[in-house]
Length: 567
Image (cartoon, rainbow, N blue to C red; front, side, top):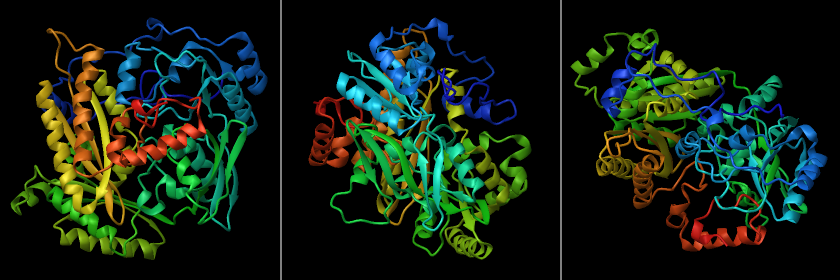
């Protein structure tokens, strides 16, 4: 059995860590009001693994011996639990299906290579055998990129890169590091930090996702305003393909025709297996602060973020929540660390006397990194912009709380799923002058979808990842599915209702000129909107690339492009 650690088979994170509302007195009333779930009633428990039926592995003795000869006896497994862990990611659809024991096809074997030579041998075997290979990093994908296609009759190998987890070298003069693709975020930063460096990349999935997974899905991090998205951070890489390796050196810029690097970024395993990458690294900052601000309304917060993006300030984080998300955030705080106690119990009364509508206030977090003089300058510039747009400074206390809790939200989703509530996200990006329309269309679409299926639902949003020309909007929605024939909705009905809401939001993105996803990738879940996003001609180019690179569809087939464009 491999020493590589994985998520729980039925949920997010590792065993023993879960969300609790016992010390958050506002949370239960909030959930009851917004999605009509009474948290005083006990939640359901995930099924016992022994209660689900796992399809028999198709791995034959000859193939098993060959794989063991490549990676060693202890790094090839057909264990049912390991195979199920590698069947799904951690999207809402994934969790509903795996908890219901819906396993039409699972990988036949999980293989853990230790180095690129072993990866090459496995990839060559897959090509020779006309098998299917699905690269696996941290397993945190939420767009359906990891699930084998139902009805696939060929041997399916899940290639888990978790043993390839080292920082191999640091080029201090160039600010570059060569890192194996299977390293998890915390392990990578620990190794870099020991030498005084950081990538600055912190996606929501940071604790449970890998460098290779970030590259394969074009990930963004919470500090991308300063450090860039993974597409900016990744300068060179190695990609294993049948019979050869694509090697891209870490050049600062190149004019060598269409960018092969860009072709690989976001390719979701369909072009090959990323084994290592050269990435930009930076010296650990002298100072790091996250400051909380409060705006009187969403429009003021959006405009402030836009003005910051074109100012001389260089913050590491620019984030503002709409009023519903602000209310949600306040509901998850402990009484002893609540926003009110941090900034003074009289603040909200004072704001109300000044004419603020407290149902519309929007919480914002701005991050600052660097030398003392730079941080002071940035805080001064941002402070003036915040004040100009009617906002006020709340201080470091709430900012510290955000920094501590920033990776916890998926645990709340699992907590609500245990109680019969469906929760998920859709995120997008658009130019500044379209963000208002994108927001209002998506909110109307979600509420219309709730009405269509007859449920009480909740939707909220925040802006993050600001750019010169626009920003990312990140929507979160939740609802308790409508009963069917007087009983709780079964898996199929639950997912049907979920699809109505998810599809409405995604289509709203397209109708308002935004993109289908900013940083979660395409996978299977977002593929239906790809032609609207890239145009039919754009998808023609993508299909042409994939078809020429993998004519037999051995490399993670079924992801990235719409089903009707598969060959």
